[in-house]
Image 1 (cartoon, rainbow over the protein chains, first blue to last red):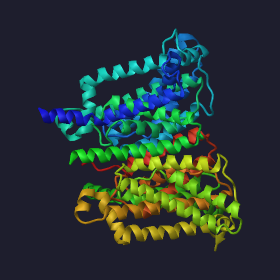
Image 2 (cartoon, each protein chain N blue to C red):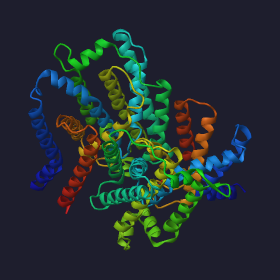
Image 3 (cartoon, rainbow over the protein chains, first blue to last red):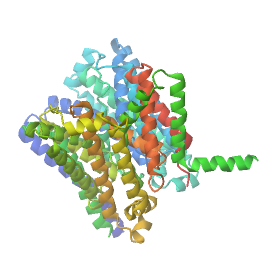
Image 4 (tube, rainbow over the protein chains, first blue to last red):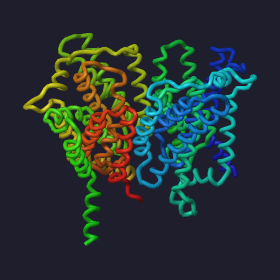
Length: 317
Length: 318
């Protein structure tokens, strides 16, 4: 009994540490920007963080199955391009555009997943080649930055709609959706296949189908991230996706998702994405050149990972 | 009858490096026959010259992949060496020797840092090198203030553009570096270690393979080779840019894999990578000659890579 309690505490130490780190960041943030806890600030920040949170969630579902998606940024840009290129008029138009963008992203994810599951090619190779493919499709859809998103939607999204922070609500809805899915056999199957593929197969799971659904689900998250980014910026940019590939992996790994699959929780990923987002903003506040952002991001990622590996190794001994 | 055919086909599938050259030969013949401008000596010369840039990066990548690592920072390293060399050379004048030395030293340092992260901090190679690549991109922005300089370095200019006996120096350099890497990977003790680590790290450790020194040699060699490619590119274009390395990140890995090396490590041949780099350069040149838009070109290239991988680079199911 005591051992189990200890194990549970140990299992959550990195989440706890991450939460503490986030708290420290929030306090520092409050110091620079005292309007942090006002609805306006929350709306703006959540609008800014939504794409990364959702992209990281997509990377998480793939990593849980034991894979990796290096084409995530390309798919994100593709969804963004489709959404903004479809000249949406009125609510019906926006919904059509969103559905189209989501379908494209899910389709791209399903293709990635099918290649991984059936072709016997390692995920890293498949998604690397797929990043050419989806990047190219994006450029065909939208050769240069452009496209439009209805102004009313952009305004409501970035400045709040009747005082409601729409992006925060959207993230919450998506996370609740994941939470529900996680308790179903489909959600558990993702963990099972990532944790022990042979065991999952022997237990009667259709492991290939599970992998495909994992990549397709990543497509849902990534597509939503792309739509969010389009609404936030009011247009689309075909080359904007690349940083999201690294940052989504960074957030997931920070949040405790294992590279080998089957281990980790979505709440960790969300915390990881928030830490990365807040840190980036904080660096801007400190007034140093924004050029240092990239340096800091890379350093933080390495330090955090090394620290975690070190701590968990100590615990394991 | 059919079984002997199956065996010979299986044998062919086994030698993936040969596949790379086979596909290269067929593609080249097809290009000569069906596309304009591929039948002249000049076009052939240009092809091997431009393939050298990718090829030099790719042989370094092969060394790392063989020990089941991966280096995603090569794009940053290519830009690093070109930008630093251009800046130092334009600052000091002279033949640019100091610029070249500083650039290559920095590249070696990046490789060593990558290896240190992988070996001592135990950060997965993909994350470590992605992170160091990101740090490099940021550091270069800071270093150049966003506007990298151009420079004429005579030595690099002639290295990239001149010919000896009709053969581009860049190609000669590529072949020489390939020979050195061939020795390192296939003939030296370090190479054996790399293969052993790639095939199974635990077994290799238990057999006394030193993982740390092998990783340091592989990652440093990879970064230095990427640096050399950056220098040749600087000579070729006469200018440096922060994004000049970007294509080489994915293409170098694609060359390695198309060359028949397993991305999981432990299996493959360095010469296959040479075929892979030539093949990718030829395909890119073909697609360019058809006047396709940038987007369509990428789509076709992506589909071709996936198709080729499906034909001969599938991992055996365990």
